[in-house]
Amino acid sequence: MSVERIVFAVAGLFILISVGLSQYHAIEWLWFTAFVGANLLQSAFTGFCPMAIILKKCGAKTGCAF
Image 1 (cartoon, helix red, strand yellow):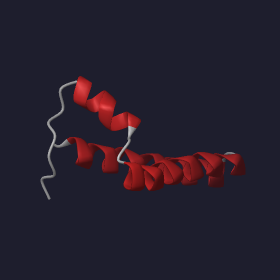
Image 2 (cartoon, rainbow, N blue to C red):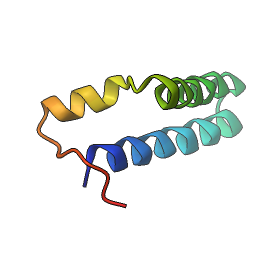
Image 3 (cartoon, one colour):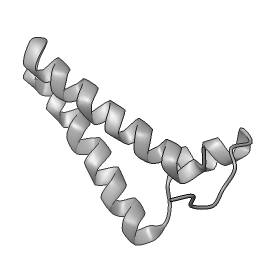
Image 4 (cartoon, helix red, strand yellow):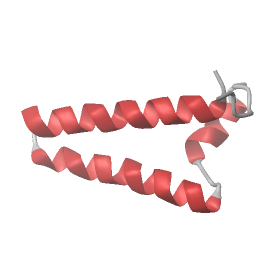
């Protein structure tokens, strides 16, 4: 799996988990959802994604494999 796909998968997973936690635990978990969304948005404009940098250092392959 490429870095880009891993980033999308983890972001989606974090959003689903935080929405679930906001329903069953505390509404404040929606702040985490907003943080993930804001990070995805800024990454679309700047190309800077901390998770992608970490994954590349861990040896994940680059290149979009859609």
